[in-house]
Image (cartoon, rainbow, N blue to C red; front, side, top):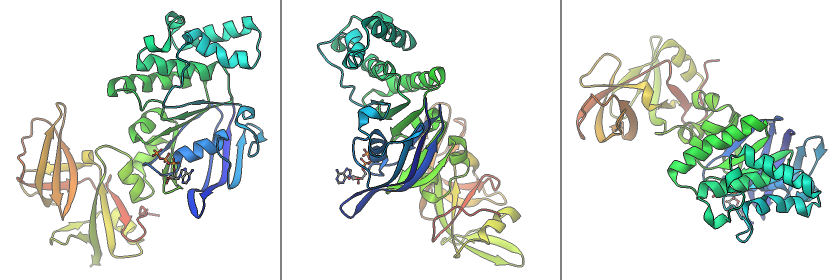
Length: 365
Ligand SMILES: Nc1ncnc2c1ncn2[C@@H]1O[C@H](COP(=O)(O)OP(=O)(O)OP(=O)(O)O)[C@@H](O)[C@H]1O
């Protein structure tokens, strides 16, 4: 296995920058997810690493080599795509053996590698079947196996689970994670699904508009999003973002809504707001950090329930607060009706504050 370094990577199509100065290091044996909305440049970044498209500028290092000008076959990588591209006429065994035959490996070595891959992926009993005799999940496992037998320095995976139904996707998610843990493989994994990235990856690279927004562990990205884009992209339901106006009088900092309510900030949050470039401040809160009250309590602000969605364990409520929708979760024992007047209390320790102009997270120091 090997590490991968992207340095000031740029890919332009005419005047359009699909990948804009992306720099990141994937450590040896690390599982990194490139994640972001459609069109953010994640597939382009992966294809640049694979060598499927030429870079405009920057450097790509795999192991100890700068691979900028190497053909894909010389980069010591294996790709797994969302369409498995298995050979329909060949058995699973032959599908796995084929890339090795192309490399002219001795027959007994091929046999050993194929059987080992089948063992690792728990598909020994499927080796004689044709792809059409396999479920979607099993076909995806064969595609993984085909990458595995090549023993690459790096696995590159592009939305490998997106053709599977929801239940199978969750199961294969665990299997790929296990695959990574067992093999200590270096994996770069593209997905638009933030939950896949959060649950599988050691680190996630969140992209938007060709730019790398944040590169950190899922826990860090979740707890400390650097800006409003990352805050609202990672986590489900999305973090609520409420635009407010900050003011300070006699040492107290308050956020005021257009509707007229006021929220007094803790000293630590007041410190953050003092660093804003503008009076416009956006309050961010995850559903689990907002308490719902049926009547006003000190520190709470008035809102109106809009939709109520019981899921069994927890009920999700969308409420209107200062003209925007806020997601709140409550235990199923609390009954709330649409249009009911409610009061929301934000956990000041876990609230996020963003500069309303730059959209960057405000930090205490
Ligand atoms: N060959 C090309 N010519 C021109 N523009 C391109 C080309 N390939 C990609 N793009 C543009 O580059 C941007 C990034 O594309 P890319 O496929 O990397 O996005 P993505 O994040 O993988 O999105 P998706 O999840 O939809 O695949 C998009 O705006 C896309 O339209």
